[in-house]
Length: 281
Image (cartoon, rainbow, N blue to C red; front, side, top):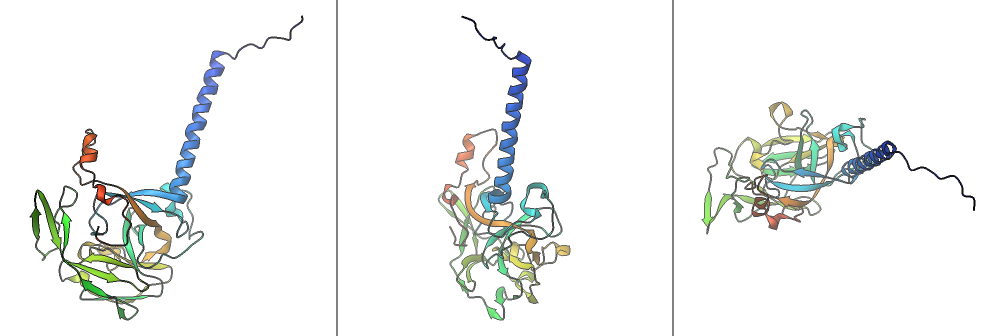
């Protein structure tokens, strides 16, 4: 019985080319999905300093939600695409903890939103006065910060370090206060000493800007200080990258990359899943 022409198998070089193209398409697809996830949904952020103690510890790793405030060029890795303004813009709420691009430098920071456009902010003796009304501020029991390689007992002069030991664990002790914003957001702040950071003249937040502060009030270069003196000044809304949502990892600094078992011995498991109301976990 007659048969049709027999199709020859693809040459080895052709099969190799198809395999290479398939791998390239797979890698490109993964890269595009990762870029879209990081740009539009969530991105990781690590805490490099103690300016947000006691809400955030050095060594905390958290997720930053990108969609709550819309998108600007700072939402995208490497600022690509680059454009002015913000798409689908929504103002943050007072009390939100936000990651933002420094107005002058090219690094990302994290602080708490205290003032919105049009608000008047003032500090007297460490107490925040918002639109002429002092924020409720109640003294709490001293905050005991567990000391580790990532969390030394750092204080701002003229304050002196105060430590205490319980068993084999050492703690750094800070004066703590409960501060409450209009509408209910409440969080713990640290106020180590009386100084320049406790005073700020009544200033109106310009349109398109926010006033940000760290919860560790004496050790935070924030909107109370001009960028030329090391602060951030009033931060353009355009510079906000996203809202901090939840801690997914936290290390006390005792881990070594080439010793995987130390990744878990240094893990602060009680901090995983923390939100950022400011409650002392």
